[in-house]
Image 1 (cartoon, rainbow, N blue to C red):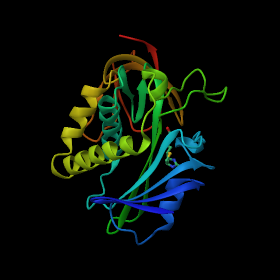
Image 2: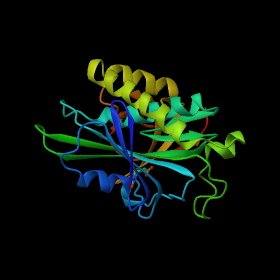
Image 3: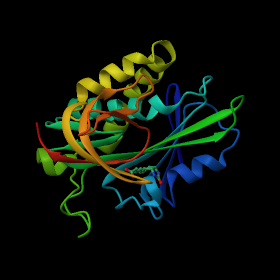
Length: 247
Ligand code: BTN
C-alpha cells in the first residue's frame, strides 16, 4: 500500500482490492478526505447490487470519505457526477452527458458510475463516494460492449490515471464546498451538464414498476421531475432512467 498526499486528501493506494468502497468503510476512524484507490478491484460494486467491471490498470477506482455536518446528502451524488463531467472535459472528452442521477456518459455510452453509501447516524455521518471511471479500456466484456465506453476509446489518447485522479479530487472538493455553502448551485450545474434535465422522453424503472414521461428539471433535493402523459407530475427519488427519443 502506498500513501499519497494531495491536500486535503490522503490517498491509500493499493494494487488490488475487493472494493475500494468496502475497504474505506472498514476505516471507521478515518479523517474526512481519506481516499482509497486501487489499480484493480476483484469485487467492484455498482448500484442495485450490480458488479462494476474493474480491469487492472485501465480505470480509476476511487472512494472518498466525507463527514458532512448536514444529513441531506442526496445532492452529493449529483455533485460527484458534475465533478466527473468537468474532469472529463479537462482531459479532452467531448459529447459529455449525465444521465440522472449520476451516470456520466461520453457519446451516449456510460464512462463512469457513482456509488454513494452513507454509514452512521445524523450526529456522526460518514459518506463514502465511490467513483469508477473507464479511462484506458479498449475492450469490454460482451454484456457491456454495447453500452460502455472509455475516455481513451473516445479520444484515441492514453489517459494518465493519476493526473485524472488529481483533477477529479479538486473538482470533488470544489462541489463539496459548494454543497456546504449553496446546495442549489449543484442542482443548477447538474442541469447545465445534463441533456436529461429538461424535455427528454424517458422511461424510468422503479422498484414498483415502470413509468414513461418527459423530464422537467430537478427538485431542490435533486429528485427528477417527470411529466406523465396524463399531465400529472411525478417526483422520482430513485430509479433507472432510459432515454426513449433524443430531443
Ligand atoms: C454504478 O454505476 O452502478 C456505480 C458504480 C460505482 C463503481 C465504483 S468503483 C470505486 C468504488 N468501489 C466500488 O466497489 N464501487 C465504486
